[in-house]
Length: 428
Length: 176
Image 1: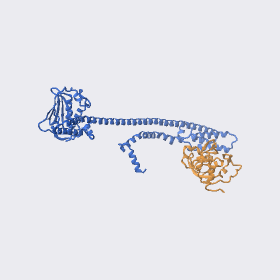
Image 2: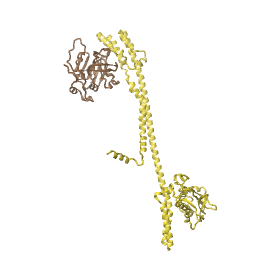
Image 3: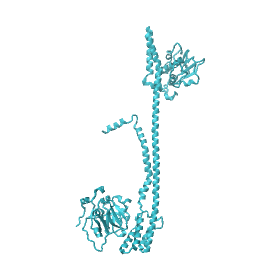
């Protein structure tokens, strides 16, 4: 496999969406416990290593033991019959060869510090060559050897301390490594949980968008079916044209509300397509047997997304029609330079504490005639706020419920997560 | 007359057991090869014994000097000074004794004993020295015979090899 092929293969096998920087970071984090362990151990064993390898093991007690043996051998040789003078001299010279060579006695200074025996004394006694002097040399050598043994004990203590320190460091390092591994695992767990939550949220959003879309499709579908049904029975050309117009309009609304590529912009992070227009025609279609319209005489021009305003009106009016029996009054007027649409019914009304609650998704007021999902009012609020305004419920004077929609400057995007707060970038 | 220079290594390889060494033995730089063994004079003392397969061989100083010899400068770690040493390589002694390729034991006059590994004496000219700076080694300088190691490899100067520099050597034999 040539080099370019190899790297391309690596890139293809890379987890999708993982950038090299992120990958490098993750690899670095996973290597961290091992690296920390190695570093800690290397650092901590360094003093012990130095003590043991470089300084301590140069020392050997043999030279001191050997000297005792050589001096005593000479002492004994002096008492042994049958040894020639030359051989006795050899014994002496062997002992003397060590006694006069401090270089072969390692740590001599320290060891002489443990008592009173001195190497040069041994040498002097041996040079004197009398039995008494030799006996004294032997004693001195034994004493020096005992001092060497004390030094050995001291060194042993040093080694033990070094080993003990190393043991503690090893345990500590193991602890730290274990801790790092646990933290690493916890982090992985948290990341996984975060990913899970993100996915759940994504799915919830998708579900919400689909629920809202299906909720809003109901009405255009119903009028479509109704119109096409009536079309079958239509007698005159005028009736037919009127019904065909209704069918076209319903189809357009279906297309607008069920644009699957824009579900997010339509229902979640509402993105309007506002255009300055007269608001009166948008409400004129709702006139009916039970719906009374009060529109201003002159045009009321305002930048609005016509389809969304229509959905606002549809939802409010449908709620009024479904939950109450009497007449519905729809009013459009200008209040404080801003357009205001009110939908007022003469029904039983709604208790004050429910006025805010009904805007929460899936919260319904007192059970209506039909079990609707409770999505209409939250969507109305979303659209009203996307237009830079809001919708409120109040008790109407003389009984009933009044919904008031105030429109302002449309926002660029109303994010679902903002909970409807006025924010982002007003479209000028 | 003695053949100077390199000693034939073929004979060497025949005598050596390959299993105990990792690298083939290299030829040493000899001062002189084996010479005729002189007979011991009545007043001469035996200073060295070689335990062999066929029994003990004894040597006087002159008889040792007739064996193949090497000469080099090295530093005795306990005496801590450089000197030129001349002596018989342990490898040649082991061959004489018929136990070349085995670990050997060197015994000293004062009772000391140490083991020298075949790996070491087969590949390096570790010698039984009988002359230093042209003179016989006095007892006061750890003589008359001492085991001396060359300056390289460096491991010969580590504590692990401290015991290999034997003083007052008297006997050489194989490890049983």
